[in-house]
Length: 173
Image 1: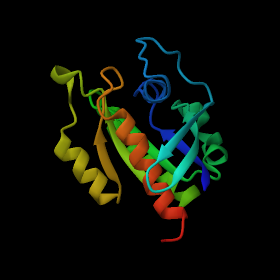
Image 2: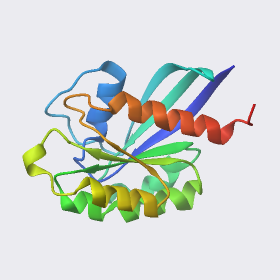
Image 3: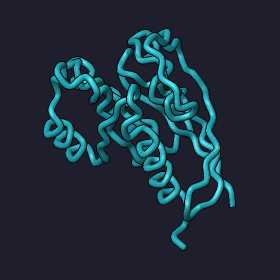
């Protein structure tokens, strides 16, 4: 059996959404991606143990306030989300509620995994893992700490979300 799923990456501008996607798809990291304007659409085919082949359409949403009005459109049909914040920037963490609310309004109980990105910048980290866990637990989502730069947990984040989506949409066998 094969599945087609739609994943969205949510979060403020410059938290590393595009870097995460490219690390996952091409296993590459660049220091200087241009800000995503609107949405960037990518695709990755995977083999997931219990499910077989999965084609993931990955929607990397621009984090700028100016695209807020388009969010609902982009979230249409999304099966799950990676909600990304930059561990070194308080504002990106403070804005998570906006993103969570947008996603829940559009997609109800579809799975979300909270992603604390830029874990490689150890000396600059402002949001503790404890704070992140509290937010994730309160909002009924998983938490994965990543670094797009080193590749830490990036593949796991996408695979885990994919498995949660498939568990969510397919009848139990």
